[in-house]
Amino acid sequence: MTAPLVELNNVNVSLSGSRVLTGISWSLLPRRHWAVLGGNGSGKSTFLKLVRGEIWPEPGRGTRIYRLDGEQRTAVGIKEQMPLVSPEAQDRYLQIEWTHRALEVIYSGFAGTDYLFRKPTAAQRAMANKLIRLLGVEGLLRRNVQELSTGELRRVLIARALVSRPKVLLLDEVCDGLDAPARRTLLRALENVARSGTQLLFTTHRNEELIPSITHALLLKDGRIVFQGPSKSLPKTARARTKRTAPKQTAGNRILIHIEGADVYLNRSRVLSRLTWQMRDGENWAILGGNGAGKSTFLKLVCGDIHPAAGSRVRRFEFTPRNTLWELRKRIGFVSPALQAAYRERLNAREVVASGFFSSVGLLARVTRAQWLRVDGLLAAFGISGLAIHPASAMSYGEFRKVLLLRALVHHPALVVCDEPFDGLDVTAKRSFAEALDHVASNGTRLLTVTHHIDDLPAATTHALVLENGCIVCQGELAEVRRHPSARRLFDE
Image (cartoon, rainbow, N blue to C red):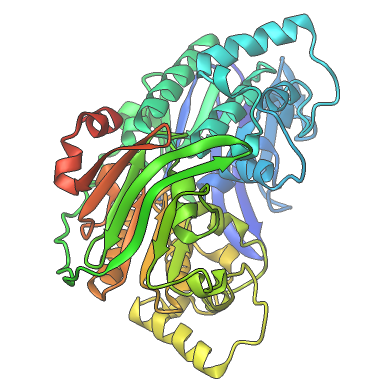
């Protein structure tokens, strides 16, 4: 029998004093491609890091063995043969302090470094060009990676991971943040990667992302393996989303946001062009569009983080130019996976919610008694008081996302802006978070939501617009927009 490339025998993993994985026994045989499944907090990301050698098992029990090229290895030096593409890896590139061109990032994969220290050889350039065409990133090569959309940067990082021809490619929720065409392109590329001989090991919350080459599946629950074997034998689980009834909307004709003829330039390039749009009280909007369409820039314009070119008109609430950005931020709450990734400090849920008073990641000043009462009231109203003293690092992805929603609500905002709020959430967490947004809408706070999965939208959503190349191509009531050809192409409807 062929020896496994990776073998885990009765391994336990603890992080920050808490047990995350228990009794893990699993092996990776050649020519097998695995999907790692499970809910938020089940241990999927930790499992990938354990396999790659980024984290160590608890001492004194269990073994981890690697075999490459017929020789037994330790975890030292194994990472180059098992690159990992994950949200954490992507966040690292968004936090660097100087310019990284996409092509330089791809070339850096040959040495496995964050920076390009050596020019690639002719053979390496040929290899990189093949992957660049395969992943459809030719038009991104000269751009700063910090200016790329989530999906664009994801494809660049996958190309970077593949240039060194790894034995195994580890992918953590790799399709999150991608529009439907980009998901199709990526999944086709991964199918070709699997057929070329590189083994795949990736996590996902969506069955439709299980490409044909996936031969095996592993299901985790509470840090334990509850199933492993051929993917066709994976137990059928109820994944149908419960139909929700839209909460009653408060009627009103007051204009909250008004944008007229807005052009937005970033680094001398026009990102948004001649936008005209308004949002009234009683409306909850979805912002739809492909990767690079300008959705995140649109949200920044709404939130006042960027300004349009001269000649544009933007009015937010009753504010005048004399109002400060801090006053605006008290009227607009914000939630996103990127904001969640920014919380690296050791804060508990109560402190994370309180940080919303300062529009900061940490606590910039003393929290008053009245502010703590507001925090505790929100935790109780949303049924998560039990998380109050839990550190952020100990929360599941879905729990932390709901805590961030409460952070956005501390100022009683008129509008909550959600940028891809369902990314990284399992089916149960998505349903719970969507219901929380519906609850927010039923209390009079309006919603502005960006998503690549239209069926994830809160039931309270009433209107939508579609962006293409920085222009609004259709807008109106949600049902009407869904029938528009641009939306149908975007969501394969």
